[in-house]
Picture 1: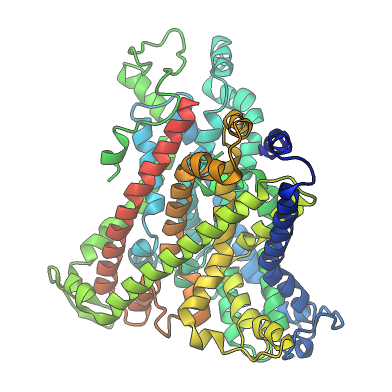
Picture 2: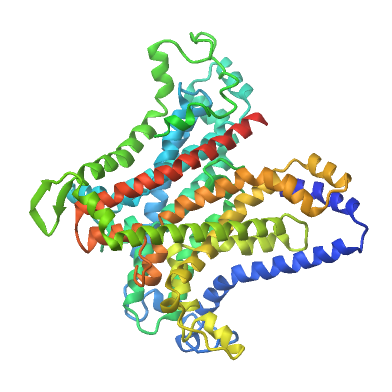
Length: 296
Length: 324
Protein backbone atom coordinates (compact mmCIF):
# COMPACT_ATOMS: atom_id res chain seq x y z
CA UNK A 1 0.00 0.00 0.00
CA UNK A 2 0.95 3.62 0.04
CA UNK A 3 1.89 3.53 3.70
CA UNK A 4 5.61 3.98 3.28
CA UNK A 5 5.29 6.94 0.98
CA UNK A 6 2.67 8.62 3.07
CA UNK A 7 4.33 8.42 6.44
CA UNK A 8 7.66 9.51 5.03
CA UNK A 9 6.01 12.59 3.58
CA UNK A 10 3.99 13.29 6.70
CA UNK A 11 6.86 13.03 9.18
CA UNK A 12 8.72 16.25 8.27
CA UNK A 13 5.43 18.16 8.36
CA UNK A 14 4.93 17.54 12.04
CA UNK A 15 8.59 18.21 12.72
CA UNK A 16 8.47 21.69 11.20
CA UNK A 17 5.16 22.52 12.83
CA UNK A 18 6.24 22.12 16.44
CA UNK A 19 9.54 22.36 18.26
CA UNK A 20 10.84 18.97 19.41
CA UNK A 21 10.01 18.00 22.98
CA UNK A 22 7.03 20.33 23.09
CA UNK A 23 3.35 19.63 23.65
CA UNK A 24 3.08 17.75 20.36
CA UNK A 25 5.46 14.94 21.28
CA UNK A 26 3.57 14.33 24.53
CA UNK A 27 0.42 14.10 22.46
CA UNK A 28 2.16 11.75 20.07
CA UNK A 29 3.18 9.53 22.96
CA UNK A 30 -0.40 9.54 24.22
CA UNK A 31 -1.75 8.69 20.77
CA UNK A 32 0.68 5.79 20.47
CA UNK A 33 -0.35 4.45 23.87
CA UNK A 34 -4.03 4.80 22.93
CA UNK A 35 -3.38 2.95 19.66
CA UNK A 36 -1.75 0.05 21.50
CA UNK A 37 -4.57 -0.14 24.06
CA UNK A 38 -7.16 -0.21 21.27
CA UNK A 39 -5.16 -2.77 19.30
CA UNK A 40 -5.00 -4.93 22.40
CA UNK A 41 -8.76 -4.63 23.04
CA UNK A 42 -9.52 -5.66 19.46
CA UNK A 43 -7.12 -8.59 19.55
CA UNK A 44 -8.08 -9.70 23.08
CA UNK A 45 -11.07 -11.90 22.12
CA UNK A 46 -8.90 -13.67 19.54
CA UNK A 47 -5.98 -14.10 21.94
CA UNK A 48 -8.45 -15.40 24.52
CA UNK A 49 -9.91 -17.80 21.98
CA UNK A 50 -6.49 -19.23 21.13
CA UNK A 51 -5.42 -19.41 24.78
CA UNK A 52 -8.66 -21.11 25.88
CA UNK A 53 -8.41 -23.58 23.02
CA UNK A 54 -5.18 -24.87 24.61
CA UNK A 55 -6.68 -25.18 28.10
CA UNK A 56 -8.39 -28.17 29.66
CA UNK A 57 -12.19 -27.94 29.84
CA UNK A 58 -11.87 -27.62 33.59
CA UNK A 59 -9.54 -24.60 33.39
CA UNK A 60 -11.57 -23.06 30.57
CA UNK A 61 -14.75 -22.98 32.65
CA UNK A 62 -13.33 -21.38 35.80
CA UNK A 63 -15.09 -18.30 37.13
CA UNK A 64 -11.95 -16.19 36.92
CA UNK A 65 -9.83 -16.17 33.74
CA UNK A 66 -7.02 -18.72 34.06
CA UNK A 67 -4.25 -16.97 32.18
CA UNK A 68 -1.47 -19.29 33.30
CA UNK A 69 -3.21 -22.65 33.36
CA UNK A 70 -1.21 -25.54 31.88
CA UNK A 71 -1.55 -25.91 28.13
CA UNK A 72 -2.98 -28.99 26.46
CA UNK A 73 -4.20 -30.01 23.01
CA UNK A 74 -7.15 -31.91 24.51
CA UNK A 75 -9.62 -29.37 23.03
CA UNK A 76 -8.26 -29.91 19.54
CA UNK A 77 -8.20 -33.69 19.96
CA UNK A 78 -11.84 -33.64 21.08
CA UNK A 79 -12.81 -31.34 18.25
CA UNK A 80 -11.31 -33.76 15.77
CA UNK A 81 -13.46 -36.52 17.19
CA UNK A 82 -11.34 -38.10 19.94
CA UNK A 83 -14.29 -38.01 22.36
CA UNK A 84 -16.54 -39.89 19.96
CA UNK A 85 -18.25 -36.85 18.46
CA UNK A 86 -18.70 -36.32 14.74
CA UNK A 87 -15.47 -35.73 12.85
CA UNK A 88 -15.15 -32.21 11.39
CA UNK A 89 -13.12 -33.48 8.44
CA UNK A 90 -16.03 -33.99 6.00
CA UNK A 91 -17.26 -30.44 6.73
CA UNK A 92 -13.75 -28.97 6.44
CA UNK A 93 -13.19 -30.78 3.16
CA UNK A 94 -16.60 -29.67 1.84
CA UNK A 95 -15.82 -26.06 2.74
CA UNK A 96 -12.38 -26.22 1.17
CA UNK A 97 -13.75 -27.87 -1.96
CA UNK A 98 -16.65 -25.40 -2.32
CA UNK A 99 -14.44 -22.37 -1.65
CA UNK A 100 -11.57 -23.45 -3.92
CA UNK A 101 -13.62 -24.70 -6.88
CA UNK A 102 -16.01 -21.72 -6.81
CA UNK A 103 -13.02 -19.36 -6.64
CA UNK A 104 -11.40 -21.02 -9.67
CA UNK A 105 -14.64 -20.76 -11.65
CA UNK A 106 -15.07 -17.13 -10.56
CA UNK A 107 -11.58 -16.24 -11.73
CA UNK A 108 -12.04 -18.09 -15.03
CA UNK A 109 -15.25 -16.15 -15.72
CA UNK A 110 -14.12 -12.81 -14.29
CA UNK A 111 -10.88 -12.31 -16.22
CA UNK A 112 -12.38 -12.39 -19.74
CA UNK A 113 -15.39 -10.40 -18.53
CA UNK A 114 -13.16 -7.73 -16.99
CA UNK A 115 -11.17 -7.65 -20.24
CA UNK A 116 -14.35 -6.95 -22.19
CA UNK A 117 -15.21 -4.21 -19.69
CA UNK A 118 -11.92 -2.36 -19.64
CA UNK A 119 -9.31 -3.17 -22.26
CA UNK A 120 -11.59 -3.56 -25.26
CA UNK A 121 -14.81 -2.41 -23.74
CA UNK A 122 -18.20 -3.26 -25.12
CA UNK A 123 -20.56 -0.37 -25.67
CA UNK A 124 -22.39 0.52 -22.42
CA UNK A 125 -19.69 -1.23 -20.39
CA UNK A 126 -20.45 0.95 -17.38
CA UNK A 127 -24.08 -0.20 -17.41
CA UNK A 128 -22.83 -3.77 -17.29
CA UNK A 129 -20.51 -2.93 -14.38
CA UNK A 130 -23.38 -1.44 -12.43
CA UNK A 131 -25.56 -4.42 -13.22
CA UNK A 132 -22.97 -6.70 -11.60
CA UNK A 133 -22.69 -4.37 -8.64
CA UNK A 134 -26.45 -4.18 -8.16
CA UNK A 135 -26.65 -7.96 -7.80
CA UNK A 136 -24.34 -7.62 -4.78
CA UNK A 137 -26.63 -5.06 -3.21
CA UNK A 138 -29.73 -7.19 -3.33
CA UNK A 139 -30.07 -9.15 -0.12
CA UNK A 140 -29.31 -12.78 -0.83
CA UNK A 141 -31.93 -13.86 1.67
CA UNK A 142 -34.68 -12.71 -0.72
CA UNK A 143 -33.53 -15.23 -3.31
CA UNK A 144 -33.12 -17.99 -0.74
CA UNK A 145 -36.61 -19.40 -1.02
CA UNK A 146 -36.83 -19.93 -4.79
CA UNK A 147 -33.28 -21.27 -4.79
CA UNK A 148 -34.30 -23.74 -2.11
CA UNK A 149 -37.36 -24.75 -4.14
CA UNK A 150 -35.27 -25.13 -7.30
CA UNK A 151 -32.68 -27.21 -5.46
CA UNK A 152 -35.44 -29.47 -4.17
CA UNK A 153 -37.02 -29.79 -7.60
CA UNK A 154 -33.81 -30.70 -9.42
CA UNK A 155 -32.59 -32.93 -6.55
CA UNK A 156 -29.55 -30.80 -5.80
CA UNK A 157 -30.32 -30.31 -2.13
CA UNK A 158 -27.39 -31.30 0.08
CA UNK A 159 -25.08 -31.33 -2.93
CA UNK A 160 -21.77 -29.48 -2.74
CA UNK A 161 -21.88 -28.67 -6.48
CA UNK A 162 -25.01 -26.62 -5.93
CA UNK A 163 -23.15 -24.64 -3.24
CA UNK A 164 -20.33 -24.10 -5.74
CA UNK A 165 -22.80 -22.55 -8.18
CA UNK A 166 -24.22 -20.29 -5.43
CA UNK A 167 -20.78 -19.17 -4.26
CA UNK A 168 -19.65 -18.52 -7.81
CA UNK A 169 -22.63 -16.21 -8.36
CA UNK A 170 -22.03 -14.59 -4.98
CA UNK A 171 -18.39 -13.74 -5.68
CA UNK A 172 -18.43 -13.08 -9.42
CA UNK A 173 -19.43 -9.37 -9.16
CA UNK A 174 -16.68 -8.72 -6.60
CA UNK A 175 -14.11 -10.42 -8.79
CA UNK A 176 -15.21 -8.57 -11.93
CA UNK A 177 -15.03 -5.20 -10.20
CA UNK A 178 -11.63 -5.98 -8.73
CA UNK A 179 -10.22 -7.42 -11.95
CA UNK A 180 -11.48 -4.48 -13.96
CA UNK A 181 -9.75 -2.06 -11.63
CA UNK A 182 -6.49 -4.01 -12.07
CA UNK A 183 -6.83 -4.24 -15.86
CA UNK A 184 -7.69 -0.55 -16.15
CA UNK A 185 -4.31 0.22 -14.56
CA UNK A 186 -2.34 -1.46 -17.34
CA UNK A 187 -0.86 1.05 -19.77
CA UNK A 188 -2.69 1.04 -23.09
CA UNK A 189 0.53 0.97 -25.09
CA UNK A 190 1.17 -2.60 -24.00
CA UNK A 191 -2.02 -3.81 -25.64
CA UNK A 192 -1.36 -1.78 -28.74
CA UNK A 193 2.13 -3.17 -29.05
CA UNK A 194 0.73 -6.67 -28.71
CA UNK A 195 -1.94 -6.04 -31.35
CA UNK A 196 0.58 -4.61 -33.80
CA UNK A 197 2.70 -7.68 -33.37
CA UNK A 198 -0.30 -9.60 -34.59
CA UNK A 199 -0.92 -11.39 -31.32
CA UNK A 200 -4.38 -12.88 -30.95
CA UNK A 201 -6.67 -12.37 -28.01
CA UNK A 202 -5.55 -15.47 -26.15
CA UNK A 203 -1.90 -14.72 -26.72
CA UNK A 204 -2.38 -11.14 -25.54
CA UNK A 205 -4.08 -12.39 -22.42
CA UNK A 206 -1.42 -14.96 -21.67
CA UNK A 207 1.78 -13.16 -22.61
CA UNK A 208 1.02 -9.51 -21.86
CA UNK A 209 -1.72 -9.27 -19.29
CA UNK A 210 -1.25 -12.34 -17.11
CA UNK A 211 2.22 -11.48 -15.75
CA UNK A 212 1.16 -7.93 -14.85
CA UNK A 213 -2.13 -8.78 -13.23
CA UNK A 214 -1.22 -12.03 -11.51
CA UNK A 215 -0.76 -10.35 -8.08
CA UNK A 216 -4.20 -8.85 -8.56
CA UNK A 217 -5.64 -12.22 -9.55
CA UNK A 218 -4.11 -13.78 -6.45
CA UNK A 219 -5.68 -11.22 -4.10
CA UNK A 220 -9.02 -11.46 -5.86
CA UNK A 221 -8.93 -15.21 -5.46
CA UNK A 222 -8.03 -14.99 -1.77
CA UNK A 223 -10.92 -12.61 -1.08
CA UNK A 224 -13.40 -14.80 -2.96
CA UNK A 225 -12.09 -17.78 -0.99
CA UNK A 226 -12.74 -15.95 2.29
CA UNK A 227 -16.32 -15.03 1.40
CA UNK A 228 -17.14 -18.55 0.23
CA UNK A 229 -15.52 -20.13 3.29
CA UNK A 230 -17.43 -17.80 5.66
CA UNK A 231 -20.87 -18.20 4.11
CA UNK A 232 -23.41 -19.78 6.38
CA UNK A 233 -27.05 -18.87 5.61
CA UNK A 234 -27.27 -20.67 2.25
CA UNK A 235 -25.15 -23.55 3.46
CA UNK A 236 -27.42 -23.97 6.45
CA UNK A 237 -30.54 -24.04 4.27
CA UNK A 238 -29.23 -26.01 1.30
CA UNK A 239 -26.91 -28.58 2.86
CA UNK A 240 -27.54 -31.33 5.35
CA UNK A 241 -25.56 -34.43 6.06
CA UNK A 242 -23.44 -34.97 2.97
CA UNK A 243 -22.53 -31.46 1.85
CA UNK A 244 -22.42 -29.77 5.26
CA UNK A 245 -19.80 -26.97 5.34
CA UNK A 246 -17.66 -25.91 8.31
CA UNK A 247 -19.81 -22.96 9.51
CA UNK A 248 -22.86 -25.25 9.57
CA UNK A 249 -20.88 -27.96 11.35
CA UNK A 250 -19.78 -25.39 13.91
CA UNK A 251 -23.33 -24.39 14.83
CA UNK A 252 -24.65 -27.92 15.04
CA UNK A 253 -21.66 -29.15 16.98
CA UNK A 254 -22.13 -26.76 19.88
CA UNK A 255 -25.69 -27.74 20.66
CA UNK A 256 -24.70 -31.37 21.08
CA UNK A 257 -21.90 -30.84 23.59
CA UNK A 258 -21.83 -30.58 27.36
CA UNK A 259 -18.59 -29.17 28.74
CA UNK A 260 -17.28 -27.66 25.62
CA UNK A 261 -15.63 -24.25 25.96
CA UNK A 262 -12.07 -25.30 25.12
CA UNK A 263 -13.44 -27.39 22.30
CA UNK A 264 -15.53 -24.51 20.91
CA UNK A 265 -12.46 -22.28 21.01
CA UNK A 266 -10.39 -24.96 19.29
CA UNK A 267 -13.11 -25.33 16.64
CA UNK A 268 -13.39 -21.57 16.08
CA UNK A 269 -9.60 -21.33 15.79
CA UNK A 270 -9.30 -24.21 13.32
CA UNK A 271 -12.13 -22.92 11.13
CA UNK A 272 -10.86 -19.31 11.16
CA UNK A 273 -7.28 -20.27 10.41
CA UNK A 274 -7.65 -20.48 6.60
CA UNK A 275 -9.38 -17.09 6.57
CA UNK A 276 -6.71 -15.48 8.75
CA UNK A 277 -3.99 -16.86 6.47
CA UNK A 278 -5.79 -15.82 3.26
CA UNK A 279 -6.67 -12.43 4.73
CA UNK A 280 -3.15 -11.54 5.76
CA UNK A 281 -1.81 -12.86 2.46
CA UNK A 282 -4.19 -10.51 0.64
CA UNK A 283 -3.78 -7.70 3.17
CA UNK A 284 -2.58 -5.10 0.68
CA UNK A 285 -5.54 -5.62 -1.63
CA UNK A 286 -8.10 -6.33 1.08
CA UNK A 287 -9.52 -2.80 0.96
CA UNK A 288 -9.79 -2.90 -2.79
CA UNK A 289 -11.68 -6.17 -2.65
CA UNK A 290 -13.99 -5.18 0.17
CA UNK A 291 -14.86 -1.90 -1.52
CA UNK A 292 -15.38 -3.76 -4.83
CA UNK A 293 -12.38 -2.05 -6.35
CA UNK A 294 -13.58 1.47 -5.57
CA UNK A 295 -10.80 2.23 -3.09
CA UNK A 296 -7.18 1.53 -3.94
CA UNK B 1 -32.67 -0.27 -11.48
CA UNK B 2 -29.31 1.29 -12.07
CA UNK B 3 -30.26 3.29 -15.11
CA UNK B 4 -31.12 6.47 -13.26
CA UNK B 5 -27.79 6.44 -11.50
CA UNK B 6 -25.27 5.52 -14.06
CA UNK B 7 -26.34 7.36 -17.17
CA UNK B 8 -25.09 10.74 -15.95
CA UNK B 9 -22.25 9.28 -13.95
CA UNK B 10 -20.48 7.33 -16.63
CA UNK B 11 -17.33 6.53 -14.71
CA UNK B 12 -13.79 5.80 -15.49
CA UNK B 13 -10.83 6.99 -17.41
CA UNK B 14 -11.71 4.84 -20.39
CA UNK B 15 -14.63 6.99 -21.43
CA UNK B 16 -12.33 9.92 -22.01
CA UNK B 17 -9.79 8.11 -24.14
CA UNK B 18 -11.31 5.65 -26.59
CA UNK B 19 -9.82 2.20 -26.47
CA UNK B 20 -6.97 1.35 -28.80
CA UNK B 21 -8.02 -0.13 -32.09
CA UNK B 22 -6.56 -2.85 -34.15
CA UNK B 23 -5.70 -1.20 -37.43
CA UNK B 24 -7.94 -3.04 -39.92
CA UNK B 25 -11.12 -2.96 -37.81
CA UNK B 26 -13.77 -0.43 -38.75
CA UNK B 27 -14.68 1.57 -35.67
CA UNK B 28 -16.89 4.54 -35.01
CA UNK B 29 -15.46 7.83 -33.68
CA UNK B 30 -15.75 6.62 -30.07
CA UNK B 31 -13.64 3.58 -30.83
CA UNK B 32 -16.40 0.97 -30.75
CA UNK B 33 -16.65 -1.50 -33.64
CA UNK B 34 -19.28 -0.90 -36.28
CA UNK B 35 -20.05 -4.27 -37.77
CA UNK B 36 -22.31 -6.65 -35.90
CA UNK B 37 -19.74 -9.42 -36.12
CA UNK B 38 -17.02 -7.28 -34.55
CA UNK B 39 -19.38 -6.22 -31.80
CA UNK B 40 -20.13 -9.84 -30.95
CA UNK B 41 -16.43 -10.65 -30.90
CA UNK B 42 -16.03 -7.94 -28.30
CA UNK B 43 -18.96 -9.14 -26.25
CA UNK B 44 -17.90 -12.80 -26.33
CA UNK B 45 -15.53 -12.74 -23.34
CA UNK B 46 -18.19 -11.01 -21.26
CA UNK B 47 -21.08 -13.31 -22.08
CA UNK B 48 -20.33 -16.38 -19.91
CA UNK B 49 -20.12 -14.28 -16.75
CA UNK B 50 -23.11 -12.16 -17.68
CA UNK B 51 -25.37 -15.07 -18.61
CA UNK B 52 -24.34 -17.02 -15.50
CA UNK B 53 -25.05 -14.05 -13.24
CA UNK B 54 -28.43 -13.35 -14.80
CA UNK B 55 -29.52 -16.97 -14.45
CA UNK B 56 -28.33 -17.50 -10.90
CA UNK B 57 -29.06 -14.10 -9.37
CA UNK B 58 -31.94 -12.57 -11.33
CA UNK B 59 -34.24 -15.49 -12.06
CA UNK B 60 -34.71 -16.35 -8.35
CA UNK B 61 -35.86 -12.78 -7.75
CA UNK B 62 -38.40 -13.06 -10.54
CA UNK B 63 -39.58 -16.30 -8.94
CA UNK B 64 -39.71 -14.60 -5.53
CA UNK B 65 -41.86 -11.87 -6.97
CA UNK B 66 -44.22 -14.37 -8.60
CA UNK B 67 -44.52 -16.60 -5.52
CA UNK B 68 -45.20 -13.59 -3.30
CA UNK B 69 -48.65 -13.26 -4.92
CA UNK B 70 -49.57 -16.85 -4.05
CA UNK B 71 -50.95 -18.46 -0.97
CA UNK B 72 -48.46 -21.30 -0.74
CA UNK B 73 -47.71 -23.20 2.41
CA UNK B 74 -45.77 -26.46 2.29
CA UNK B 75 -47.95 -27.89 5.04
CA UNK B 76 -51.03 -27.35 2.85
CA UNK B 77 -49.74 -28.02 -0.68
CA UNK B 78 -53.24 -28.41 -2.21
CA UNK B 79 -54.30 -24.94 -1.19
CA UNK B 80 -52.01 -23.07 -3.58
CA UNK B 81 -53.75 -20.13 -5.24
CA UNK B 82 -53.28 -16.58 -6.44
CA UNK B 83 -54.13 -14.14 -3.66
CA UNK B 84 -53.05 -10.74 -5.02
CA UNK B 85 -51.49 -8.67 -2.24
CA UNK B 86 -52.63 -10.70 0.76
CA UNK B 87 -49.08 -11.68 1.69
CA UNK B 88 -48.01 -8.05 1.55
CA UNK B 89 -50.91 -7.05 3.77
CA UNK B 90 -49.64 -9.68 6.21
CA UNK B 91 -46.08 -8.36 5.98
CA UNK B 92 -47.17 -4.88 6.94
CA UNK B 93 -49.81 -5.78 9.53
CA UNK B 94 -47.99 -8.57 11.38
CA UNK B 95 -46.64 -7.03 14.59
CA UNK B 96 -43.70 -9.46 14.81
CA UNK B 97 -42.65 -8.59 11.30
CA UNK B 98 -42.89 -4.86 11.95
CA UNK B 99 -40.76 -5.46 15.02
CA UNK B 100 -38.17 -7.27 12.93
CA UNK B 101 -38.04 -4.39 10.45
CA UNK B 102 -37.47 -2.04 13.36
CA UNK B 103 -34.81 -4.36 14.83
CA UNK B 104 -33.02 -4.51 11.48
CA UNK B 105 -32.93 -0.73 11.22
CA UNK B 106 -31.66 -0.27 14.80
CA UNK B 107 -29.07 -3.01 14.44
CA UNK B 108 -27.78 -1.65 11.14
CA UNK B 109 -27.72 2.01 12.14
CA UNK B 110 -26.04 1.40 15.51
CA UNK B 111 -23.42 -0.98 14.15
CA UNK B 112 -22.61 1.18 11.12
CA UNK B 113 -22.42 4.47 13.01
CA UNK B 114 -20.41 3.20 15.96
CA UNK B 115 -17.96 1.24 13.86
CA UNK B 116 -17.63 4.18 11.47
CA UNK B 117 -16.72 6.60 14.28
CA UNK B 118 -14.37 4.07 15.91
CA UNK B 119 -12.94 3.24 12.50
CA UNK B 120 -12.19 6.89 11.74
CA UNK B 121 -10.52 7.36 15.12
CA UNK B 122 -8.42 4.23 14.72
CA UNK B 123 -7.53 5.10 11.12
CA UNK B 124 -6.29 8.52 12.30
CA UNK B 125 -4.24 6.83 15.04
CA UNK B 126 -2.80 4.27 12.62
CA UNK B 127 -1.95 6.94 10.04
CA UNK B 128 1.07 8.00 12.09
CA UNK B 129 4.57 6.68 12.41
CA UNK B 130 5.26 4.81 15.62
CA UNK B 131 7.15 1.76 16.72
CA UNK B 132 5.34 -1.47 15.90
CA UNK B 133 2.76 0.17 13.65
CA UNK B 134 2.49 -2.92 11.43
CA UNK B 135 1.76 -5.16 14.41
CA UNK B 136 -0.87 -2.77 15.80
CA UNK B 137 -2.53 -2.63 12.39
CA UNK B 138 -2.54 -6.43 12.15
CA UNK B 139 -4.06 -6.76 15.64
CA UNK B 140 -6.85 -4.35 14.70
CA UNK B 141 -7.62 -6.00 11.35
CA UNK B 142 -7.67 -9.53 12.78
CA UNK B 143 -11.30 -9.51 14.05
CA UNK B 144 -12.48 -9.09 10.49
CA UNK B 145 -10.67 -12.30 9.56
CA UNK B 146 -12.47 -14.52 12.03
CA UNK B 147 -15.23 -16.60 10.40
CA UNK B 148 -18.47 -14.77 11.38
CA UNK B 149 -20.13 -17.84 12.92
CA UNK B 150 -16.97 -18.64 14.85
CA UNK B 151 -16.82 -15.04 16.11
CA UNK B 152 -20.44 -15.14 17.21
CA UNK B 153 -19.89 -18.46 19.01
CA UNK B 154 -16.73 -17.14 20.63
CA UNK B 155 -18.55 -14.09 21.98
CA UNK B 156 -21.57 -16.07 23.10
CA UNK B 157 -19.70 -18.72 25.06
CA UNK B 158 -16.22 -17.44 25.85
CA UNK B 159 -16.90 -13.70 26.34
CA UNK B 160 -20.51 -13.07 27.36
CA UNK B 161 -21.25 -16.22 29.38
CA UNK B 162 -22.17 -15.05 32.87
CA UNK B 163 -20.27 -17.80 34.72
CA UNK B 164 -17.09 -18.47 32.78
CA UNK B 165 -17.07 -15.71 30.14
CA UNK B 166 -14.05 -13.42 29.89
CA UNK B 167 -16.11 -10.27 30.47
CA UNK B 168 -17.45 -11.25 33.89
CA UNK B 169 -14.17 -12.98 34.71
CA UNK B 170 -12.27 -9.73 34.27
CA UNK B 171 -14.94 -7.84 36.24
CA UNK B 172 -14.47 -10.37 39.08
CA UNK B 173 -10.80 -9.34 39.30
CA UNK B 174 -12.16 -5.95 40.35
CA UNK B 175 -14.72 -7.50 42.69
CA UNK B 176 -17.70 -6.79 40.45
CA UNK B 177 -20.26 -9.49 39.66
CA UNK B 178 -21.45 -8.80 36.11
CA UNK B 179 -24.95 -9.57 34.84
CA UNK B 180 -25.99 -12.27 32.39
CA UNK B 181 -25.20 -10.12 29.39
CA UNK B 182 -27.09 -12.01 26.71
CA UNK B 183 -30.44 -12.19 28.50
CA UNK B 184 -30.13 -8.68 29.95
CA UNK B 185 -28.97 -6.85 26.82
CA UNK B 186 -29.68 -9.20 23.91
CA UNK B 187 -29.57 -6.67 21.09
CA UNK B 188 -26.61 -4.77 22.53
CA UNK B 189 -24.42 -7.88 22.80
CA UNK B 190 -25.12 -8.65 19.14
CA UNK B 191 -24.30 -5.07 18.23
CA UNK B 192 -21.04 -5.16 20.21
CA UNK B 193 -19.97 -8.38 18.52
CA UNK B 194 -20.72 -6.92 15.09
CA UNK B 195 -19.02 -3.62 15.91
CA UNK B 196 -15.94 -5.60 16.98
CA UNK B 197 -15.98 -7.38 13.64
CA UNK B 198 -16.86 -4.42 11.39
CA UNK B 199 -14.70 -1.65 12.85
CA UNK B 200 -11.64 -3.14 11.12
CA UNK B 201 -13.52 -2.97 7.80
CA UNK B 202 -14.27 0.72 8.33
CA UNK B 203 -10.70 1.33 9.51
CA UNK B 204 -9.24 -0.26 6.36
CA UNK B 205 -11.34 1.85 3.98
CA UNK B 206 -10.85 5.07 5.95
CA UNK B 207 -7.12 4.47 6.31
CA UNK B 208 -6.88 4.13 2.54
CA UNK B 209 -8.80 7.41 2.30
CA UNK B 210 -6.46 9.19 4.73
CA UNK B 211 -3.46 7.97 2.81
CA UNK B 212 -4.86 9.33 -0.43
CA UNK B 213 -4.98 12.89 0.93
CA UNK B 214 -2.87 15.19 -1.22
CA UNK B 215 0.34 15.67 0.77
CA UNK B 216 1.28 18.99 -0.81
CA UNK B 217 -1.89 20.63 0.51
CA UNK B 218 -1.35 19.16 3.98
CA UNK B 219 2.19 20.54 3.98
CA UNK B 220 0.99 23.93 2.80
CA UNK B 221 -1.56 23.96 5.63
CA UNK B 222 1.05 23.24 8.26
CA UNK B 223 3.46 25.83 6.78
CA UNK B 224 0.62 28.36 7.03
CA UNK B 225 0.31 27.46 10.71
CA UNK B 226 -2.95 25.52 10.66
CA UNK B 227 -3.56 23.58 13.87
CA UNK B 228 -4.20 19.86 13.81
CA UNK B 229 -7.90 20.45 14.46
CA UNK B 230 -8.18 23.02 11.66
CA UNK B 231 -6.49 20.67 9.24
CA UNK B 232 -8.82 17.89 10.33
CA UNK B 233 -12.08 19.83 9.92
CA UNK B 234 -11.16 21.86 6.83
CA UNK B 235 -9.04 19.41 4.84
CA UNK B 236 -9.35 15.88 6.15
CA UNK B 237 -13.09 15.64 6.72
CA UNK B 238 -14.15 17.06 3.32
CA UNK B 239 -11.66 14.74 1.60
CA UNK B 240 -12.90 11.83 3.69
CA UNK B 241 -16.59 12.44 2.99
CA UNK B 242 -16.65 10.05 0.03
CA UNK B 243 -14.79 7.36 1.94
CA UNK B 244 -17.05 7.73 4.97
CA UNK B 245 -20.10 7.41 2.73
CA UNK B 246 -18.68 4.41 0.94
CA UNK B 247 -17.68 2.65 4.17
CA UNK B 248 -21.09 3.36 5.72
CA UNK B 249 -23.05 2.15 2.72
CA UNK B 250 -21.02 -1.00 2.12
CA UNK B 251 -21.18 -1.72 5.85
CA UNK B 252 -24.95 -1.17 5.79
CA UNK B 253 -25.39 -3.55 2.87
CA UNK B 254 -23.55 -6.32 4.70
CA UNK B 255 -25.07 -5.68 8.13
CA UNK B 256 -28.69 -5.41 6.90
CA UNK B 257 -28.17 -8.97 5.69
CA UNK B 258 -26.58 -10.23 8.88
CA UNK B 259 -27.81 -13.65 9.84
CA UNK B 260 -24.92 -15.39 11.55
CA UNK B 261 -24.71 -13.28 14.71
CA UNK B 262 -28.46 -13.16 15.36
CA UNK B 263 -28.81 -16.86 14.65
CA UNK B 264 -25.87 -17.87 16.84
CA UNK B 265 -26.03 -15.55 19.83
CA UNK B 266 -29.76 -15.36 20.56
CA UNK B 267 -31.43 -17.56 17.90
CA UNK B 268 -33.56 -14.54 17.12
CA UNK B 269 -35.07 -14.61 20.61
CA UNK B 270 -35.50 -11.78 23.11
CA UNK B 271 -36.59 -9.35 20.41
CA UNK B 272 -33.44 -9.66 18.30
CA UNK B 273 -34.97 -11.27 15.20
CA UNK B 274 -33.98 -9.16 12.19
CA UNK B 275 -35.43 -9.53 8.71
CA UNK B 276 -33.05 -12.17 7.36
CA UNK B 277 -33.65 -14.26 10.46
CA UNK B 278 -37.42 -13.75 10.19
CA UNK B 279 -37.44 -14.79 6.54
CA UNK B 280 -35.40 -17.86 7.45
CA UNK B 281 -37.98 -18.67 10.15
CA UNK B 282 -40.98 -18.10 7.88
CA UNK B 283 -39.40 -20.36 5.33
CA UNK B 284 -38.28 -23.17 7.62
CA UNK B 285 -40.47 -23.20 10.67
CA UNK B 286 -43.72 -21.99 9.15
CA UNK B 287 -42.92 -23.31 5.65
CA UNK B 288 -44.95 -20.38 4.33
CA UNK B 289 -43.43 -19.82 0.90
CA UNK B 290 -45.83 -17.06 -0.17
CA UNK B 291 -45.25 -14.97 2.95
CA UNK B 292 -41.47 -15.56 2.89
CA UNK B 293 -41.43 -14.32 -0.70
CA UNK B 294 -43.39 -11.19 0.12
CA UNK B 295 -40.95 -10.51 2.98
CA UNK B 296 -38.11 -11.01 0.53
CA UNK B 297 -39.60 -8.53 -1.94
CA UNK B 298 -39.99 -5.94 0.82
CA UNK B 299 -36.35 -6.43 1.82
CA UNK B 300 -35.30 -6.07 -1.81
CA UNK B 301 -37.16 -2.78 -2.18
CA UNK B 302 -35.62 -1.47 1.02
CA UNK B 303 -32.15 -2.47 -0.17
CA UNK B 304 -32.74 -0.86 -3.55
CA UNK B 305 -33.18 2.45 -1.76
CA UNK B 306 -29.89 2.00 0.10
CA UNK B 307 -28.23 0.64 -3.03
CA UNK B 308 -29.16 3.67 -5.11
CA UNK B 309 -27.17 5.86 -2.72
CA UNK B 310 -24.37 3.33 -2.64
CA UNK B 311 -24.09 3.22 -6.42
CA UNK B 312 -23.96 6.99 -6.56
CA UNK B 313 -21.10 6.98 -4.06
CA UNK B 314 -19.17 4.30 -5.86
CA UNK B 315 -19.57 5.99 -9.23
CA UNK B 316 -18.42 9.25 -7.59
CA UNK B 317 -15.25 7.49 -6.48
CA UNK B 318 -14.70 6.08 -9.96
CA UNK B 319 -15.07 9.56 -11.38
CA UNK B 320 -12.51 10.91 -8.92
CA UNK B 321 -10.13 8.18 -9.95
CA UNK B 322 -10.67 9.12 -13.59
CA UNK B 323 -9.96 12.78 -12.87
CA UNK B 324 -6.61 12.06 -11.22
